[in-house]
Length: 270
Image 1: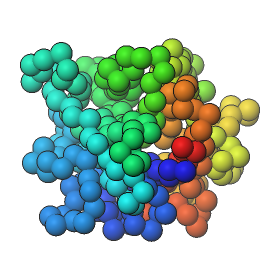
Image 2: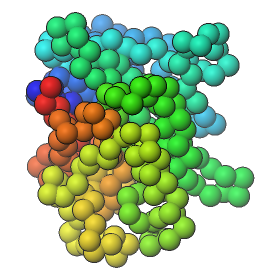
Image 3: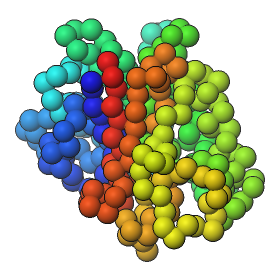
Image 4: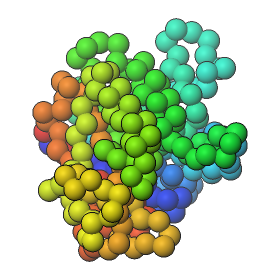
């Protein structure tokens, strides 16, 4: 079994927290660069470009870290669209939002893991949305899906909701649904986390459908882990891999951790 943990660390310096997670690989979002001389193997290893592109000053990005000797990491290089010079170059729509690496055991690639972050956008009218970034991520990842039996594991902070819109907004419910439908069309199964693999919100939020299996993975600055209501972190896996993947949100009060996002544990029976 290969164990991964997906975690939006909220721009905090939490590298020292990774060692105690009993995992082989960490998929990080909003990660600050590790300190010089860190013993961890981190992707990317170029700390000079450690940021997320956009109009905001985001001095953090997605990253992948190797936490055990049971696996090897073979990074999948990315570059900006304007830097592409050949057909084999993998262009990313927004620098810092996708980090991918082949996960190997004994020199054999088991699957490709990607840490993703769907950055918030702002429209000319002042609307805030993230589903545009989520679709860009799927467009970027489609380059790794050239064969129908691809083996991808994708996890991170998508900044969208599953099965509903904010405060019951039907328009955004439908917009968010297109991300999950497109992932399925690309051969990516939604794995979770879903109840009972995580604690559900209590009291039940008015905006959340009564039949929802969503589990809160994020709390804003007026909430605590105990009062968190929204799930923003999701895991997808290729159909050829999905049967071997199980996911659990570490969102109990005694396991949430020091970020505004809880950790998501991912086990791959490989």
